[in-house]
Image (tube, rainbow, N blue to C red; front, side, top):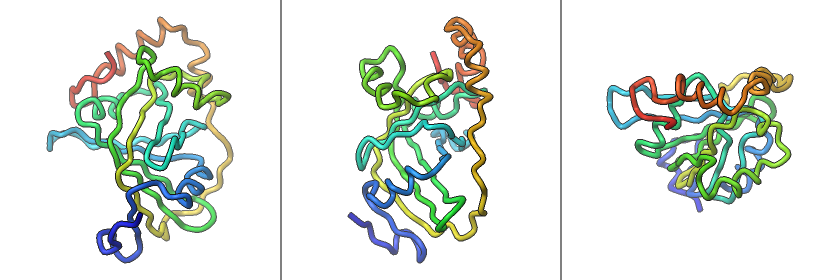
Length: 194
């Protein structure tokens, strides 16, 4: 169902779900971006690029992605604090297009009851060979499209394998130690991984 077009400006349209054309567009993208922010007005807004085969559209209002180990844990900390999340997908080839998904997300960890079922969504994906910290599960309540006329053309040459190679050499204890050192809190001091 479309939302009033006047709400989004002349070049965009808004909806209350992930439409079929959006789903098809998202499935063709090699990367996406995730943005979150703390509640404090002095807190830092975070935007993270995501690659690999790490995203699943569960239905027209539910998205999950595998969150891999990184040098920080801003998304996790912000979701724990307030749940707000925005996804953005850009066409770097073909017809210009941008799709944004707005909603509320939460972190699902290996000890949570939903973990096995969500992990099954990614069966066969190389992403599971990496250091999976959690799965981010998001309920989407607004989506939008815009033109993407200013997004440059870029050629996809392949995935970077470095994170997966780094994870290959780590034991569970190594990862726990890394998460405790690098991912325990956000840069603003919010709790991230326990």
